[in-house]
Image (cartoon, rainbow over all chains, first blue to last red; front, side, top):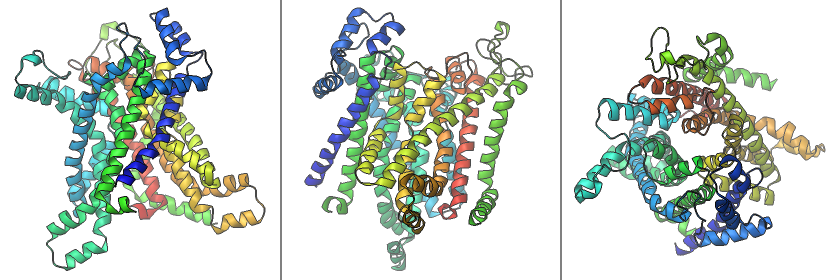
Length: 324
Length: 282
């Protein structure tokens, strides 16, 4: 297992380099140099800010030197300073918001699993039943539904007409004065819609995937054997089949990380949640380049980390992988 | 000719699939609406009528009006043009890149394959939406930039598909025969391998149009896509969000347009997939 982990970590290095290289290329996409664009589009950018950008990227030096320099800073999590008036270090800004985004994404992953697995299993156990057909319809709807539109509809229903849930924000006024229990309640209250909406997109894919997996497994010989032994159907489905059908789900979950992180931009700006997504949106609107670049790199790193976690859990679950 | 027989079989299967047909009808309807928008629309989509701001749906304004008194129905009809354009241009670009990279990797194998596929892995590591936003922060949001960026960030699936097809085809007898006859690499790739791998590419392109339309609408919704006054479904929804407590029609109708369109392309894509290979139907 340890050897496998080391191998995976080593494989991450070239990917990491590639990610930083692509991000670096993106910065240099700007017609002219970023500092010029800065002055053209945003007169606000002071000479001092331009100077900072030039320092950060060393724009007057050869490209490979610039890249190497930037990498070294990156290794120390020095992503430069934001262009916004407070001029705080980019990493500090991201650090205070990353927790919210990760928590929401983890919650929605959990929700996806809790809902999609039973749906997939039941649909596969009774193929072509009304439940299976309803699932198919739901899957098609899920794939076609723009997440931000679902968010608007739910906001309208629960926030405006029924007035059950808050329209925006992460906490209420006077949050600091609440007891711990009240704080948890208040957070849950505010997070219900965002988590629901961000889980919805993945839900369709996962339940369809689960159904396909389950159908595949049920056809296997060992399931026939289990049935032939006279085991009750429930044991066959939930013990023998489900375990094996669940394995690839880990990989799919890992693959869904970039989508979830990307989606956080939309949901966090709609629901006014102070996370990485909202910060990124604000950075793009303000053309705060150091912050944009920092977010891009950290977002890609999170994805890489998600994939690594998925691979490692897969190896933990499947002994063939770690020994072979 | 085997080709003709195969086509006939394809259409026979396609016509029997009700979901696929409804997808085709939706997509054709969308084409029609975009081309006929100037004649179908009851109002100029950009005509501002400050006397009719935020009017609920009525006989005069089928889908109501927006905060500037513009007719939402007309704006949605014209918005279809944007969706069509974005869908086709960005997917065309993505397919072109994906086919090239996939073909090179699959045909030549070896280190070329290794490098190209690692690049694909790398691009898949980026949260695409982050990458798109970062580029938009640098370039300006405009419909051409949006199409280019969506195309440049969504070719990876096609590349993997084409590569897999090439790998499975390149050792088949007909390719060996062509090689034995002295056909060059270019001829083998373009005349023999590519035409035989186009079916799955078509499926992924059709599904890709749906994805591109979703991305564009999300960008426009955030104000980073198609810029007003040009109507797009996404930017009408922005007004919907700003007026969520008073004007439900601004949120409902453009979203429905996106939902139906995307569903149409998805159904069509799945239908083509099943008609090409009936074994795929579970």
